[in-house]
Length: 321
Ligand code: AMP
Ligand code: ZN
Image 1 (cartoon, rainbow, N blue to C red):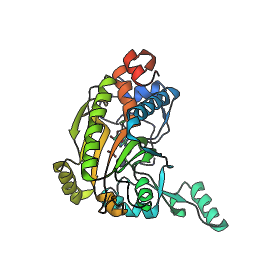
Image 2 (cartoon, helix red, strand yellow):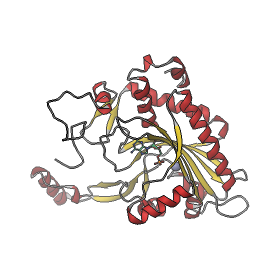
Image 3 (spheres, rainbow, N blue to C red):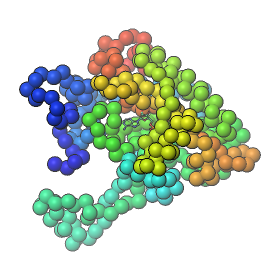
Image 4 (cartoon, helix red, strand yellow):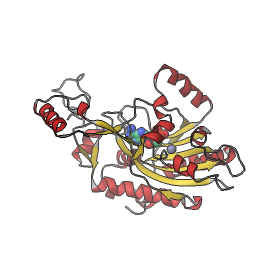
């Protein structure tokens, strides 16, 4: 079997297969039909109930951010090769990136492709890179767009984005998906503007988590930078307190899961895409990201698999789901 596909929903080996074991959280979600198995780790269908909760969260984030005067921008979940290269994502997270390939050959090539399939051989080397890369984080498409518009307004700018994102991290933990949604508010402007924005959203994130009656805490964090050099970058990111996460216990016997993140990129994206401040100089940026699936899963974990039986106040916070 391909290393990336499977049908099981619990880690293999270890326990006596004859002994009755309580279902894992993932097994409960699949049994209740909230997530739908596709045979690929971290790739699930979602039921109407799951999507109803996701919609409630999204609408709540729109209400909470109504005072931000954010420009709403939506992109399909992919970016072009040039912007992807400029982002330097491959420097930091080569292990997470996903690229789109297509068959670009002629009739002869097509016959070869079909022969490979027929012989149950690898056919993917018959495909070529399309120049399209899956979006790794919802905010990535906006920086080149804003950069091309010229200097920012004097007060800076806030953008509201939402996208499916791809990260190659197949896992049996339902919270670690290969395709999931991030809703973000992105702030572009002076360093002080970004720091204040992030402070405000950490408070709002905590207050929202508490209104949802979830056991939340905020802690300093780092991104999973690749390799030995990555360890140094991750340590420095922690030391400079560039990333905070809102954590909620979700998975059985595992440390709490990051369900929101609060990031200060300094001038990284501003410099890469020439995003200028009103009075000259390079813009700083920051973003707050809400992991839609993880928040849905946290709610299901703590309040049960049937939202109709959740506390009334929680349902009201989600706009009466
Ligand atoms: P990050 O850009 O890594 O800070 O991610 C922002 C948010 O997206 C996280 O706080 C999670 O809630 C969510 N997220 C990140 N990776 C995954 C994943 N593999 N599966 C589901 N949600 C994720
Ligand atoms: Zn972001």
